[in-house]
Length: 277
Image 1 (cartoon, rainbow, N blue to C red):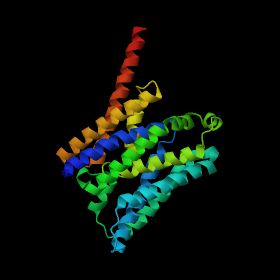
Image 2 (image 1 turned 30 degrees about the horizontal axis):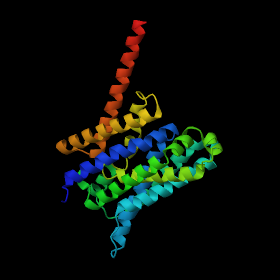
Image 3 (image 1 turned 90 degrees about the vertical axis):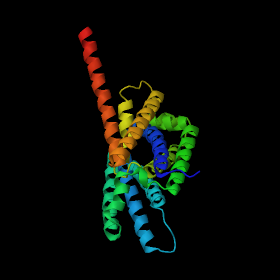
Image 4 (image 1 turned 180 degrees about the vertical axis):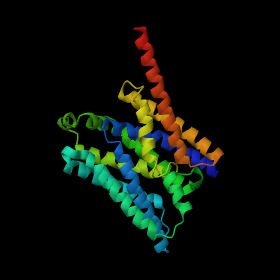
C-alpha cells in the first residue's frame, strides 16, 4: 500500500525527531553543538550542487539528498581535521566550514535556474515535499544511525567524556570520531526535507538543551531529548499542515517554546524552594 504525502511526511518527521536529539546529546557532551549548524550549510552546498548538476546533466537523474549527504560527510571530516589542526582553538573549525559552505552555496544557487519556491522547501522544510524515494533514504539512514549508535554506544560515550581514558582503554579515537562524523552527516542530510537545511541544527540542539535542565544522567539526557524532540516535531508538523506555514520553522518554534517552559518551571521551583528555607 502506497503512503499518502502527509503520511510520508509524518513517518519522516517521527524518525527525525528520534534520531536528531540522540546525536545532539553526544554533540552537547563534546561541547560541539555548533558543528550541526556548520554541516547544515555544507549540506546546502551539496544540495545546490546536486540541483545544478541535475540541470546540466540530462542523461541521469540526481537526487539532491544524496549529494547533500556526500558534502555533509566531507564537511564533517574536514571539521574533525581542523579541530586537530587548531587543537587549542577548536571552536574555529565550525565557523570556517560554515562560512565556506554559505559562500559556495550562494555562488552555485545563483548559477542554477531553480526558482525561489523550490529552494524554500530545502531551506525551511516541508512535509508535503517528501517523496517515496526520500522516505526510503530517510528510513535507511535512520536504521543505519540507530544500529551504529547502539553497537558503539560505550565507545562514543567514552571518547566524548574523556578521550585520554578512552585512548588508554584501547579505543581508536580516530576511528570513533570518523564514525561519529558519519552519523552527524547522515542525520543532517536525512533531516533537511522535513526541517530544512537552515533549521536542522536547532532540532539537534534545542531538545537536548531542554533535556539538560531535567536529566540527571547521560541516559536520562538521551531519553528526555528524544521525548522533547518527538513532541516538538509532531506538534510542529500538525500546526504547519493546518496553518500552511513552514514545517521546519514551526518545529523549531515549538522546541524553543518547550525549552522556555522548562526554564521558567525550573526557576519557579528554585524560587519556591528558596522561600521555604
